[in-house]
Image: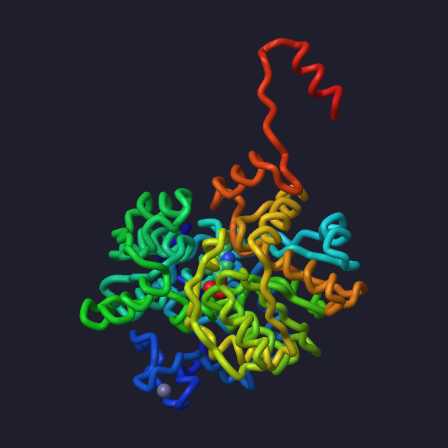
Length: 432
Ligand SMILES: *Cc1c(COP(=O)(O)O)cnc(C)c1O
Ligand SMILES: [Zn+2]
C-alpha cells in the first residue's frame, strides 16, 4: 500500500471527457457524473498517439518493478487509464488476479477450454477495486470534499477502503437488509458513514444522484467514467496473459453494466490500437429476477423497462442499470448476447466453481451458469475457448454457501456431526 510517491511519469497523452449522447466535451477534471442533457460521460483517448508494440513492451517492463504504481495491475497500464498526477494516486496493488484453466469445470459446462479470471482476488474482494483506485485518485486530484456511492455491498466495501487510505470522508448508501454481513462489515470497519436506505439499490442510487450536487458529494458509482477506465484493465491483463491471443467468448455477470461497458471499451480500443487483431464475442448474464438488459436484448433493443429486482445474487440485484446505453453499444459492436439464468442455476454453478477449488460469490457464478445454458442451447460451439470473469470472492457471502450446502441441493456437501470417538470417524471415512 502506498499513497503518495514520486514517479517517473509525465503522461503527455491526454484524453477528453465527452457526453455519449450529445457529444459535448467537458473539463477533463469535471466532478459531475453526467451531462446536462442526461447522457453518460466517457473518456476518449487519442489512440493514434500510441504504438501497440511500445505499449506491450512498456507494460511488460513494469512487471519486475518495485514501484507501487508499476506493481498495480491497474496503473501498470496507466497510458490508457488516467493521466492523474502520480502524487494523487491511491493504490493497493489491485489487479494481478489469477487466471485458472479449469478442465473439469469446462467439461461440466461443455466447452473445450474454460478459463476463470478471478477478480475476487482484488484487495477488498471484488473487481470494484480496479475502478476505485482510479476513481478515488481522480477525486483526490480534483480536491473533492466527500466521496460517496450507492451500493449492493462491494462498491461500498471498496470505496470505504480507498477513501480511508486517502484520508477522505466517505458516505455509502445501501439497501437495508439486502447486503451480506461480510460486505456490510467491510464498509463500517473501514470507517465509511454507512446509511441503510429503506428501499432497494436503484432507489439508493437515485437518492444519491439527486442529493450529490447540493451536498458536494463526488459520486463513485460506475456512472463515474474513471471507474470504467480502471475496470478496463481486467481485459488488458487477461489478453496479456493469453499472449494477446483472443478467446472466442468472454462471459460476465451484468448488474449496473459498468463492467460490460468497460470490457467492451477496452476490447474495442485494443483492436483499434492493434494490440489484438480480432474481437472476442461477449456474453452478459443476468439473474432472471433482475434481467432488464436481457429483456431489452430479446426485444431486439426495441423496448427497455426497468424491473423490481429480486435474486439471491445480491451484487446483481439491480432493476434499472445506469450504464444501459454504453452496454447496449458494446453488445452490438462485439456481436455479443445477453441471457438470464435462474437462482438455482446460479447456485449450482457456484457450487461447481467452489468445488473446483476456485470459489466465488453467487453473482460471479452467473457467468458460468450462462455459458452452460448457452451450450445446452447450442449457441456456443463446443470447440470454443471461453473465459468467464468471476467478479467477487467466495467469502463475500458465506450465508449463501451455507444455505446451499446445509439443505438438499444438487451438489450439497453436508457437514457430518458425530460423537467424539474413533469409531464414528472410521465409519465416515470408510464410506468416502
Ligand atoms: C458490482 C458487481 C457485479 C455487477 O457489475 P456491474 O458492473 O454493475 O454490471 C457483479 N458481481 C459482483 C461480485 C459485483 O460486485
Ligand atoms: Zn450531453
